[in-house]
Amino acid sequence: MKMLCIFLTFVFTVSSGPSVPQKKTREVAERKRECQLVRGACKSECNTWEYVHYYCDVKPCCVVRDYQKPIINKITTKLYRK
Image (tube, rainbow, N blue to C red; front, side, top):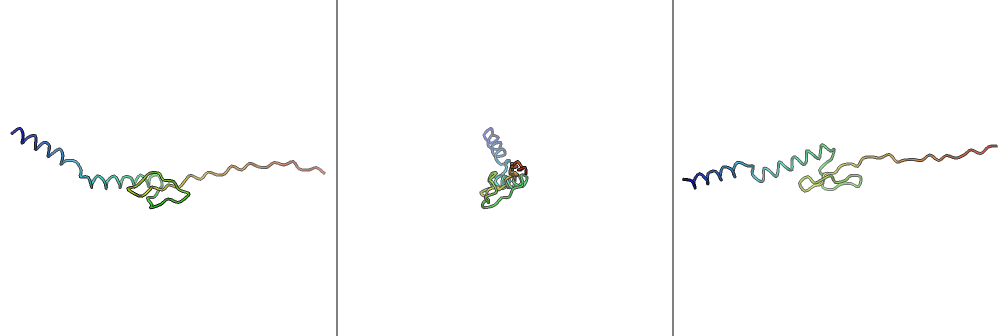
């Protein structure tokens, strides 16, 4: 009787968790959602102006790099006096 109770307890605890395929698809969907939150897209390949944030399943999450305005030093010249 004790063995039956132990067996049933084991069966119920193991079977209560999500199956592996369900867990995998849920993780992939969560990664895609996180990719969209950082304004990225799951593509097969990133462009040169994008960087890989992390991978959605097997495709990278490509995020556009922040544009940094180039610093332009003004050239100051002295005007010639006549």
